[in-house]
Image 1 (cartoon, helix red, strand yellow):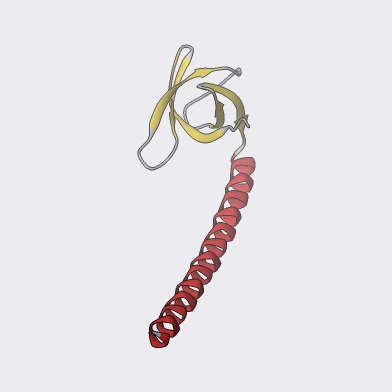
Image 2 (cartoon, helix red, strand yellow):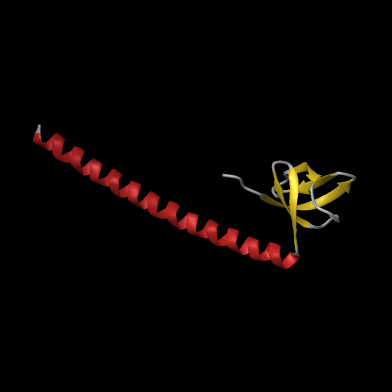
Length: 101
């Protein structure tokens, strides 16, 4: 599976751009599309800028990512609840086994 990573161009230096991926992570990327400027939102794949996004497109993508993060948090919460219920059942089973001895 191939994934593009979203970021914001901090600086353009000829055929390279410094891209901010958030959280303090910046990396150099080859400029693979025309007219990249500082402040542009871009998609980087395999170290190359493969697409430029408008502010509106970036916000739409961000909303999808935000929704995915919320869904993942719910899944993790349900998984934690499930694991806790298994733990409680195992503790009860252990208690029953120790009483039988």
